[in-house]
Image (cartoon, rainbow, N blue to C red; front, top):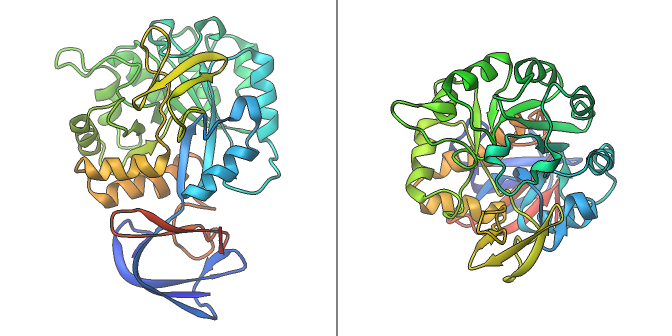
Length: 360
């Protein structure tokens, strides 16, 4: 099918008045039947590389089938489900379930092992009893599971440099949930880490005499960073600052838990009770515990905060695909890639979701 009369987000990250075509589930150079989109905005399907659950589903507890279908309906066409801290047998079962998912809905790109190699000082909502250091050979072997696409490591832990180097051969290593200083962060990036888990959260602040992980990441152009753009985890001014400090290197993520898109009430994250009230997900002591804002709304909020629309969309599509190691399959409206796209209005409210060239 050929689509015409649209404002299309092009592979180089800018909007153009253009058209595009699909055939056999992928974008192509020429199509058959023509459809006029009436000047609508068209962007690639959104990709959430850090999500624990949403709409009452928890990926680690329930598997990915229900979550995948719910995400596809709202415009998230690919995702990387994340594992919070949990017993190792549960983590292994979670990863085994991601190895070859067979269900409709959003595409599972692999898993994110967030809750293993973390600092107890910056545990956030994670249960520190299940933490390990990268010099734990059994834990390190578990995270080299073939389904793992991202893994978080706190650089100050024993064996971190060697562990990062080993993990980076198979996955994208992120630094996060850390109390590390600038030198330790630099060592982690030199060892092969190339991403930051939810920038600003669960890490030291950027100070002019103690620049820490944020400065170490910002000055390395190969390092990307994810950002929770809900206005709760990060102030709107800090969202704008992050996109300026990391030009075209910020990936908006939801970090949603099962409370995402749900009414106020009590939910869980890796078995821990979480209260959703007024848009905030918290543990009993008040610690933030993931978000309740799905990625499409995160994207709209980031734009409403004043971040250029093109930078936000780039991060949630092309860059997200690259970080997840899937940029040869998804993330852009480009010939040969999966025909996942969203037809939106100019404010990025989604009117239609298409996946593999079929409207959902």
